[in-house]
Image (cartoon, rainbow, N blue to C red; front, side, top):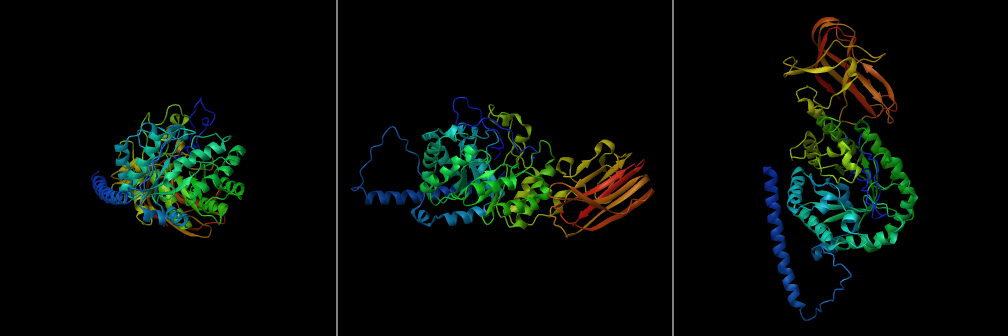
Length: 543
């Protein structure tokens, strides 16, 4: 979630709640109704069966039961309705198996993000949203539990009941749940109180198969010595309370693999069950970054608990391509669980106003769906990935037929040359891209660029092509493959032949190359510089 990376709420009444910090994430229906009705029917049937069993059990034990006196000082937290057979079957191993294959989605309602989800709890809206997530293909939802909302050091019964309702609603749509605790939190001086609070929140779900895992702290700051000392005490305390529950931590996108390695090194005496990687880096190099993260925690397993790109500063097509690259990179690396951040965009006012998060425009636009519930192109990518389909270059708009926001092509040096979409001028279809009257900047010329969905590794063979034509062409007009290493260092390029000077018809330009040593990404550029005439490009491919 955008939490740690999202600054914390500034609550002046308690030192336990973290002060706001800067975010690391700023870089990014009818079918649903049918699904919901089916889920409700299923839940109703389950409820009826459970009631009958409960009645039989109650009758048999009637004479043996002595009502307990409830002390008013202790809250009676709601217990999850779990069947006895299911309780016996739940182990940490079975939960971990589900974690590693989970089709997880990060979630807040579009009108109530972060802690507002709990303070302004809208069960009907949440139920509809979970139905939408299930219809998309999710089978797991991550939910973040805030001590400052739930009550600390004693959880409030009303919030514990809201959590129970959330888990039950998720289950009615065949969604399991992952818990994240202690977000927007800095009360590291009170490890005992933190452990007691966590035990009370988690106790009802100790052997509940609907809950898969617990992330003890979102985007943990391993450079904070007080936080490290705190979590070293928290892990064994929670293990004692819920021994069958897998435990994890995450780091923010900026800490990356190095942060994960440091967490593992700091917790050798209290190891975690798996590591949660939040990826907000350059998706062109996602495969190399994921491999680096795996190596940092090996032999411990890894999931990608958050990833995404905001459409506040990027196109919706760019967001779709970003997620396609990350899912494909994870698949190639053997990571089966990738969780997009987040299901919905947020409307103005949805993020608590006393948080700096609310003042960062990018945080409102990470959703697969817009705040009004309509789908962005990224939703189709995630649906395909969760359906087990291999993702390819179809999302790259290689024929330029998509409307502008749905295209992932990006300009380079647009101040000296701009490509526009020319309707009715395509080689095939309607559209092509057109450069006219371009200049240059030093040795560089303007272009538009895109990167493939498939990961890049050194020694791999690549082929790219595009069709081009020109009128009164001068200067440099070509296509080129540009190579980069994991640190975004340019390694060189391989170019095609030039578009003929003067006037020419549609001609195929091709480039074939082997990825150089150290290459982790490639960009395909369609270039036009020092051109006093006009050049068109269309029907691009890269493989």
